[in-house]
Length: 417
Image (cartoon, rainbow, N blue to C red):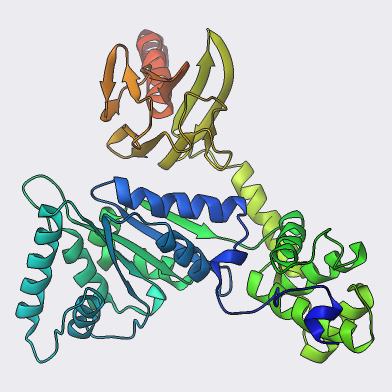
């Protein structure tokens, strides 16, 4: 009897090759895909997705690309250790050109003409760069310039950069500040927690043909998480090896003993996320977060005059919608999955409609993009969002004190003399 027949499987559930059919939609993966989808309906869409090795970025990209409509033209570049000229050649090759033996200025002209032509034909163009952590600063600067190609109405190239965590550090360097200003959304995919990991394993087993969620015993999951750290690729490696161990012993399900046998064969130690040092660092991080006073934006959610929630946020981007992965979650049929975004920076705060079904309103006026002032009330469906700029609140308190104190200070000054 074969390995698959033994476990009542139709195919291998824990292969390392990316396969969108096996993609498990954790909260993080759903959020990352929503950000990628936003590039299609935002004319200046530029998204950066980062994640640990084996976190599922490439599978996520494949799932996103497989669902694109016919009016979307895309190029995928995954070989990224290139010079700027080689990178332009790689992009044009993906779009169907033969761009070799040409000067850089000719390559840029070819790309410009192609993008304008696609725009004229009603097409949307997306450039996806995988393994973007390997891009040099010169190539990243080239991407910045490419993102600026536009008609008299709008930009014509959407861009998605996906890479390992080092990409975050590269983008945050001072000499790439102009590129980062072009980026609309950034998201980091972290490891799965224990519950998600169990769902992930059972999901893959089910897709492979084993129904009932009984391929792994309950006592196996904690050990899998301890040694994999919740990283999907490591989970796959450990589970696949454990299945072979169980098959060799003629077992029909995997238990804790089989996981430990696989750990021994792989010569693994506990994942770094489960060490005491990590826990101490996490405690320090949590304490710093608890003491953080950097929140500058307050959003109060109301419905029919009742206050439903009040949340505060630091500078950055907040997504509002009925999907639970949003920062502001509104459970309503009148609110789109990702309805609007609120962006706060040193200049102030702006709300922008994310192509929602029912729109964003300031009073009776529907707005696509609007700069908010403290106290503004935004309507989304039957809900209201009341915006408060906490920086203004603090300033207002100080001004009130200054109005009261001057005379008292003068008197004290006279007594002191």
